[in-house]
Image (cartoon, rainbow, N blue to C red; front, side):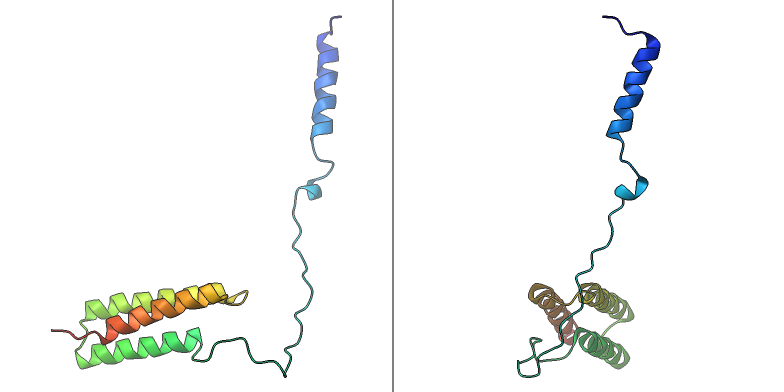
Length: 125
């Protein structure tokens, strides 16, 4: 059985129509609604670890860097490098904090802040 060119076009068109989605909205993924967040129970302890928040820690580090630069303990070049690292930690804390900090994210921010604090307090020659 031979199919003519018109018959072949009809078959190809029919196959393409069945393979394509019915509408453009079928291709777009809608955002999920996970519902509201339950109110905190006042009788349960707070799950956040004690100590300063990430923002307060970054502000403290920036203040320490500025004080060390003013006193001459840090060169302007070192101070810029350390300030850049403090900004990076702050941006990381904001990005992680959008959906709440997990224990590993909190640990990473804390480790980076401790390393930066050690670099600021390191004795210079």
